[in-house]
Image (cartoon, rainbow, N blue to C red):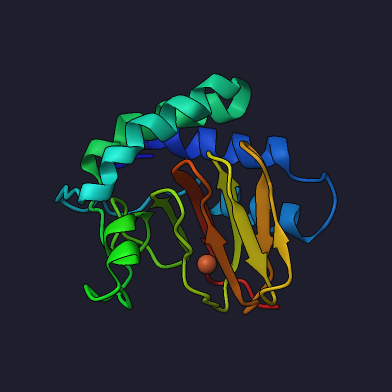
Length: 202
Ligand SMILES: [Fe+2]
């Protein structure tokens, strides 16, 4: 761990701990989580911090407060996220168009680990998504398997629009390779951490 700053290490440790606390002990999600944890034992080049906030980021403080109130591993993760959040470069999804104002102004993503992250690497991507109340994220899919940890209430779609799951605060969502997925917030903001194991083959 020659290069990784302490606050980022604490975030990654607590992110892994929250995933482990939530996942079933056996099965594919745990296998992916263990591989991500193993990969993170080796750090990579730190990128210059170029913080950027969007208006929707006004919801972060409230979402963090809600997660803290839950206690346990998710509260510890919320604290660690709050510590690194001022370094993050919040961006809109590349498909977002100003003409679709509710989504354009109502969401933001930031990469923490990955090609555009605080730590530059391509084998593991870890980031965060934020949505204002009553926003539906677009359907998307990608080859890497993915594990979300929900820091807020909200629903996740898997496969098709008839299949929504509600992990609850501290719960997880596992997306197998290339499954279509999306998420939607209710009357509170949605904040979630996602981890992708990019080099895995299924
Ligand atoms: Fe995804």
